[in-house]
Amino acid sequence: MKSFLLIPVFFLIASQPCFSAEKKSKQTTAPAGTNYEVRADSRTNVEKLSDPDASVRTTSARVLSRERDRKYLPDFIKLLNDKNPIARRIAVDALIEISTGPEMAAPVLALLKTEEELNVKLSCINAVSRVKYEPALKYLVTMADDQNPVIRTYSLSALGEFNSPGTYSLIEGKIKDPAEGVKIEAVKACVKLKIKTALPEIVELLKYPIAPVRREAASALGELGDKSVRKNLEKLLSDKDKSVAGAAKEALDKIAKK
Image (tube, rainbow, N blue to C red; front, top):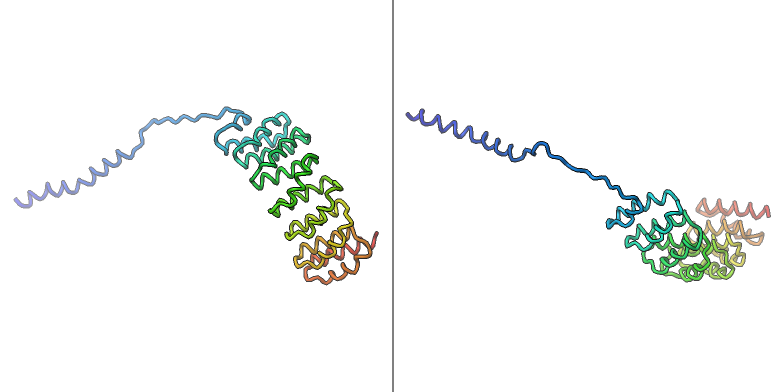
């Protein structure tokens, strides 16, 4: 009797996991025949410039900018007021490619005066200097004294494009700027504009402790200098930085041919 009673109990215990597994399987099986609808975005890229999603706006702006078509001029000018700084920068860069007139430069300058994002500011500086937009000159002079050395550097580069004699003394004075990048850009501008009154300041840079500054000064003397700076350059022929020594040698060769 005892063995007869144990057999049903054994079968009940052994079969229990099977029922449980079957139940779980039914719960996790996805219903067959489910349909998913995929809708294509039929809007034009111009229409997408008004999308609430910034990533959609910037992607469409990039696509339109590659076309370099003047018909998009009003759209990119409108995009200058976008809340997203990436969209504003794309708009500025696109405007440089499709227009060189005041219809582009005027709104870009207006943005430059109020813009807080650095990369957008730099694009604006490039834009107004590329088309030599005269109303921007006064503002660029102001930005040459900005607290941010990157803005000072870009402003000096822009002033070099304008070639306005009224800015020569400012450019020359920036050779003494505490930031090495600003010093270098000031020297480059002096060479480009042939500001020979800057020679004494450039000669002093030959003693500067930072090699790129010495190298740029040596190269500048090769363009602006004469035999009076030969001794100064000859001292750099034994400079511990080979690029500086090479620049000095090249500068001496140029002066010898004058």
